[in-house]
Image 1 (cartoon, rainbow, N blue to C red):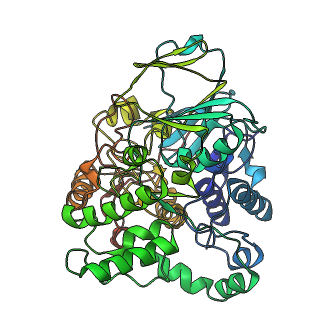
Image 2: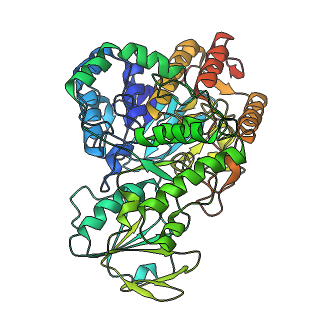
Image 3: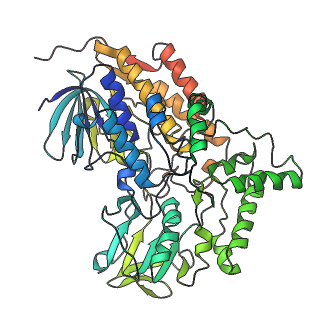
Length: 535
């Protein structure tokens, strides 16, 4: 096969598919490498029970093609994993993308050549290709965090991870199941697993805030109205701080300034609507601790009203700032703990000491399980990038360049790694937004940048611009309550990972900044003269 390309894209999820489509439209030769045997990225791998998006379907979708918008019919307010995967397969087929994708092919290494200003990309399957540009579309939540407990190798049952769920159906009917973790995937899957399992024991380290999804089917009239105004919705979403909810009226209330009745009314309305917009009820709730506590206590009261056992309700009621960890969206999560076959173990009080041949032993006793589910999340934002051996100028490994935390300019590029771009990388709004909105903005910016660079050969973020950008990301975060708890936004779920707040708050001002950088001749980047001719 051909081994020389204009661009190599790693990953075939939302980001990789649109990047391929965009670059192909520019007439470039592109190769995509994908570890799975199909498209989908996150939605290919995450097949755990109850997996669905927490951004509404009509907004968690591409906006780059009006015909695609009009022809696809979403069935639910929050689409399930199978429906999202069908959508991405439809996109891949509609735009004939699969012919440029190599499936079942995991990239092992990528090395930059200073002499040619090109990348050599090698795969675990033995491919070796040469490319001017390397674009990492590996996703923010794609590198599963697999914990290792003492005695784990002795366990004789089945171990599953929500982020690497089997593709064949998993029947838990009549089985004894242990779930470690209470993040988003656990909150979505626990209600469904509890309906099947004979016994379900949830091991919780930190209680998680979750709000109801109030999911429902989408009727045809509603969809038709959306499709008539899709362009307006996409434009409105680009003007928000989070990349979705552009049709909703921004809050005019500060929780500390309004009276008790008004505050309660706003919270009740947001709870009744459901979804992530719950946190947008007040302008000050992510800025001021006292304001945040009013919102947090409202959710705790909801948990106390749902969970019948008062002592259990208190264990399920989070104590940290609401929003400093990702807010979850659920269907029946707290009510699941009213079931006779569901128990909660607080591992702060009763820590896991080891896995045994038959299950889990804690400080106070032992549990026998047929299946243990790790709902332990991901090495977020940097994990998938650092699991590839990427080497830049002078052979410097990305792992070394980011030893003190990720260093990027705009979340798009990093010094010493010319011609390499990251889609929704650390230092960009990414996981604090509707990911599809952020992906489209990044893909379009990268495509414009590649067009600008053309045959000049080389573009590289400058160290000064990068350090200034890191300071900016940290400054914005410091004005908020986001860094106040140990979240995966900081990498706190990964032992030994440097604690750095990785995403940037605010999509709309970020988009404006990216436009300004481009308009100023890609300010903050060094663009080289033509590369030497390769002999």
